[in-house]
Length: 478
Ligand code: FAD
Ligand code: SF4
Ligand code: SF4
Image 1 (cartoon, helix red, strand yellow):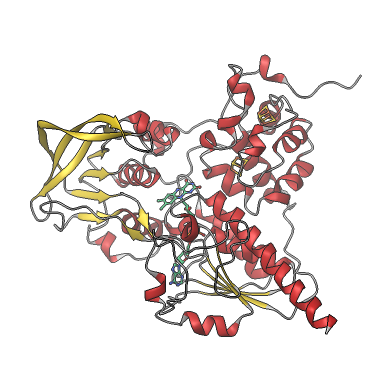
Image 2 (image 1 turned 90 degrees about the vertical axis):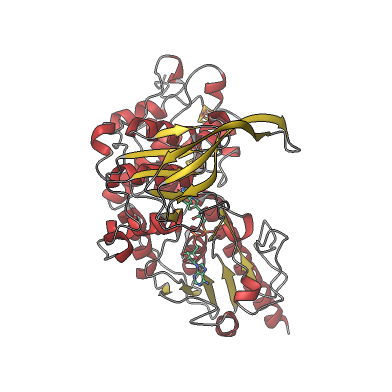
């Protein structure tokens, strides 16, 4: 009888790829996890119990065929594992690196419920795709016979790029417009390279360019080129512009020098990583070196800021969050990484105001958790008399993002938006009420995740193609 390659979770424990020593990694911007060796990846994949109803797959936004590619990996059939994984995911090596797996696939792995650690799905997904790139198994995108239609995509983040990939493969002419000088959206300029090294993103952009996707960069739609002009040039338009309006702080002194926005800070750091000249970094405005840094917020953006500040050589880095550890929105894995690297978390603490200009301190109001609100989440409330000043030379605001007012900026009042300012679009197809205009990713969902943007982009591209086919059949029938 053939040897059973799977169900090894009883005897083999969960083992993540090795993390680089915190005191070494906090001095550089390289990714913190080493790659699995082949035997280790096979061993970890073999822990999967091959569930008949795989909850990991159900809870992966892309419904990746996880049990099958784990089995192929366990059997050493890596090329087949890669082929399965790339069939449902445009950028598996990116998701393997940065999906919050504890909230998605791994968080729903049944062997954890049975008291064993989850299968390390994300790390295996990264391993098989990195191996595919190394071995030349990632094939060039070869477009099918050229079609007459063209699609304009506004926004070169994961949503826009995933759609570009599907459309170009089908033979559509694709033009991607972006206001930045490099494609990739937040994968390029938001997420730091210690989570996602930039050559991983640029390699995918180059693959799309070689396939004939045209990138029009440094093009701020609404300023350099109108939305209406883009609509006039293409048969369909896809909006994938993300959300970029930072939530602001109020209170005395909130406008002082030295209080900066998270995304400005992270973009500058990522640009330095690319070797760009960034004046605001050189003159110290967006550089934490030698400073006492306070980051305000408890989400993943705040985690990225504190860990960037440590690497830039801040003398101290503190993260203030108004709820406690259990109630923070950021990933617990990232909090643990930050703590190992030397970040101090100050829970139940909210800024009340700021002293000095340039800033010299944050007036901190200590909080406690009160009664649950309508969502069931306990609301923070101030503790009278419990305030103090936290010294700071650089304060980074990481309170989340909201959509820009696109109908006004683009002078297109008919663009349908929700009361939160996100674009109103069908969740399955991305179709908006404007004919032949689709929308995907954060601009529809609000600040979300790369994997959801990829899912949306793929699905909207399929809907656009179906629309083109339907129009072509109508013309043929006339
Ligand atoms: P974006 O990636 O935001 O791309 C939108 C693009 O549109 C940008 O390139 C922008 O320049 C362009 N654009 C906008 N307006 C215009 C215009 N008028 N004209 C031309 N171009 C325009 N998600 C994860 O899954 N894991 C993580 O670890 C993670 N970490 C994050 C860390 C940070 C600091 C931030 C801010 C977000 C993080 N996210 C993470 C969320 C994730 O990056 C987003 O959900 C995802 O990138 C959304 O994809 P998108 O394609 O909708 O938009
Ligand atoms: Fe898990 Fe993300 Fe990969 Fe899906 S895409 S299997 S959620 S890591
Ligand atoms: Fe394997 Fe866990 Fe998915 Fe079950 S839930 S198929 S054990 S990875």
